[in-house]
Length: 292
Image (cartoon, rainbow, N blue to C red; front, side, top):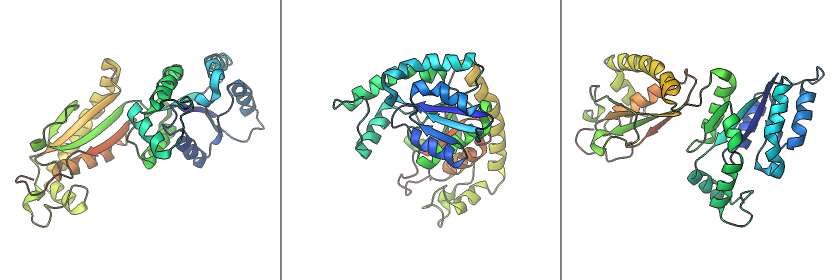
């Protein structure tokens, strides 16, 4: 049986994660009182319990009893009960934005400042983040992207890594992204800017992608880049303790070649046990500037 505790910051996407798990056949219980977790775990081990996949949502709404959760988890471990913890997080700015957009009250704000409630919650549930098997930073993630991440975690299990790989396409004329860890220049590939019917389009579109990849060099580059990342990323995790890696793919203007390669690299990296995202920094820039 698989028993997953879903927790994290309020507003980080726990409800979405639980709905996704329910769609995948999990028996889901949200906001189960902390003092009932051990009893529920015992029930779930009963041969007559018909579900072999269970998810339990725990969050700050448990109040003071949340402080007892570390002891509950220790008791489960001592009882040889196997469980996993999925922790959903997001940066403070994103959480503030979400609460304001939905006009919901933070459970710890108590009519005060939203930022203070978030800070208090982050401190109180820090121990759960330390215990977590899987951590997903949902900042900037669309609902469908979060669902995809949850499905990846459930399919890969212990092979899943908390490393977040961000692929950013950019244009050299606008500068290299400051947060880039690895930078790759794809200006050697065919440039659609010089094709009248393509220059106002982007690497999100198939005709542009076909033009960029027509020579075969793009495919060879992707193969070599994938092999290198497959080798490098685990070593960044093991030797450097990194949990975020930004890969910048650049061309002249950031609309055609870099976007094409970034999207194709994103597709290929889905086979690796990491959270992978793709962003196109300069895709909306003026297309009439010479060179892209």
